[in-house]
Amino acid sequence: KEASERLTGHWGRSYLPVLNAYVGAEGFKTGSRDPTAQPYGGAELRWNLFRGGRDFLENRAREAQAQEAQARFEQIHLGELTKARHAYWEIVYFEELADLFEEALSNTEKNLAAADKRIRAGLATPTDRIEFEMYRIQLEQDYARSRLGRASAVRVLNVLIGRTENS
Image 1: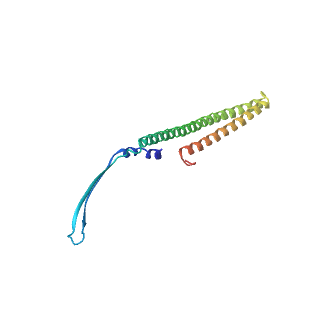
Image 2 (image 1 turned 45 degrees about the horizontal axis):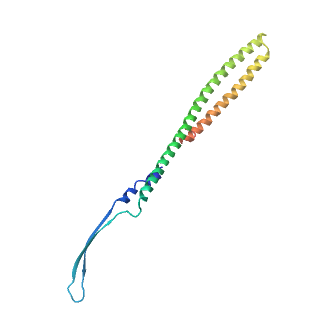
Image 3 (image 1 turned 120 degrees about the vertical axis):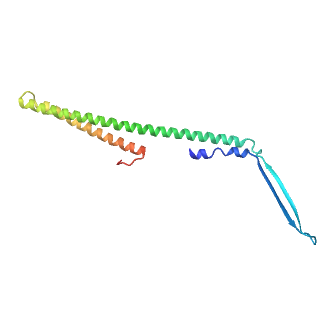
């Protein structure tokens, strides 16, 4: 983007006329005559007529390239910003999901303890405990998956914003 911008803007100067003026004196001696000095001077005007508008067209092309580079920069910037926002909201999602799993695990432990009491009292069969244990195992796996998803999202966000892994 910056390189494209630096290539623009200087073509307008090629249209400006260049005026050179010079003056001086020349000293010389010919033969047996006395040395003499003769002044000289001149002026020169240069105007860019030869390229016939090619400078103007080239300047417009370079300005278009600079605008394209700016648009690409903004597109990439917004794309990376969107990825970072997505990673952040994934972290929030996985943290809330982990909280829900922790609460569900706590409730499952309470229900398992209540099922054990019912089994000891003879009001339920051991199948009830097995169902709660299977559900607890499933919740523990889901909880571990949510923690792993959070850790992965944190790593992605760190890469996107240029932070170290431990920050």
